[in-house]
Length: 148
Figure 1: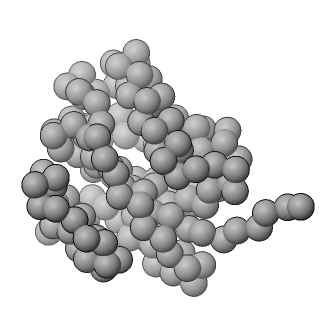
Figure 2 (figure 1 turned 90 degrees about the vertical axis):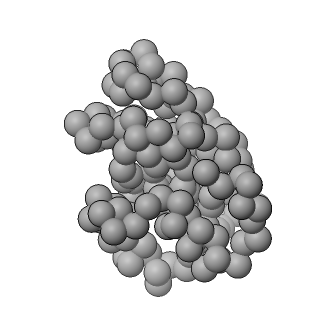
């Protein structure tokens, strides 16, 4: 029997202590590397983008892939790769947690555009404020002490 799913995720995670270490010149290479990880797991990447201190990934996971495993694999592999490539010299790794939010297919275009425009978006809003808005929008309870 086959499994058929249509779950669109927006995965969000930041750098360790939300340090602003991901410089603009290195981000395209990082995005390409993470895109390869996602493709190799038979998942569909719709959009990836971010700013100095965090990333957004819009994806559909293959039914055989668990969300937590996907995020863990992306973080471990990309962290090692960033250090090997000396892509971001001040990069100290990724934050421990992550956020994952689901969307319907009819919200995909809006979500892709939102992620594409991260630079512009964060001229007006800090990551923490954006992240709390996402948590609230999706009705996710959180403890302030775990938010940096």
